[in-house]
Length: 274
Ligand code: FPP
Image (cartoon, rainbow, N blue to C red; front, side, top):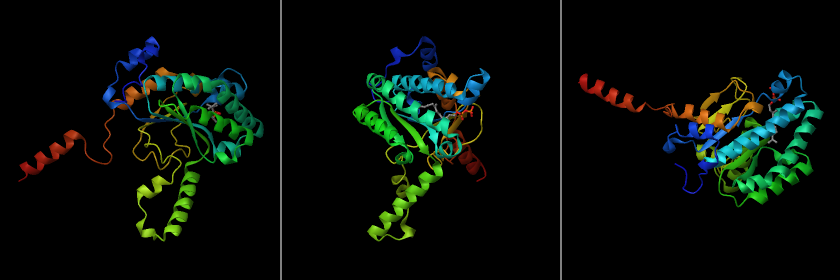
């Protein structure tokens, strides 16, 4: 259950409220991560330019974030621009995505304030154009005091490069403190990730049907439940987030252990066998 005072269920649409009513409040995820895929296909199906798919995708970012904030979801992390997108997409598309990000931040900071949303970023953001970084800093600072959902955009992000950056900074720390490699723990690696300040995702959603992780949060998703939908990102709305959470709540998370019943069953078998 999320902290009291953060819920704004009355602001959900009637359809969203109906799905929300089926959820178990004590088993809501704390952190949802999303691979937003299918903008290009959405545009292609309508004989539109890919850019328009991205533009519609930005609308989905706004609406899904607002639903997340209404149900009091503490952490929402969206894969907005990968290192591979930066290297492999045509320059015109990369430039469009950068402009879209800038205009998105300009147009949405007030809405983020109204929805108590705090803006953060992960990735090699220092490699993005200076004017984009400036706008990102502005949005982050303006929303820093908000206490509802933290919306993290993964920008110029890659899971492997995050691990490289983490190992580099951990190695530097170890050298400074004269610590040997045999003393490295999982906690040390966690402390040096971009995501050190947040819990690991409980649920990873991928839109547009592909069954891959695309180098997203590789360390953090070790025990994350994965939900893949055929729906393309520009068609994804708050109600689909709630449906994914409903599906998540039907899963049993065992973290490598046994299910609740299975533990007792194993005990019974042991006793019966003498
Ligand atoms: C995948 O669609 C999506 C992206 C490459 C980037 C995600 C960008 C947005 C949702 C819009 C802007 C976001 C913000 C935060 C303003 P694709 O182009 O790979 O689709 P395809 O696989 O159908 O070609």
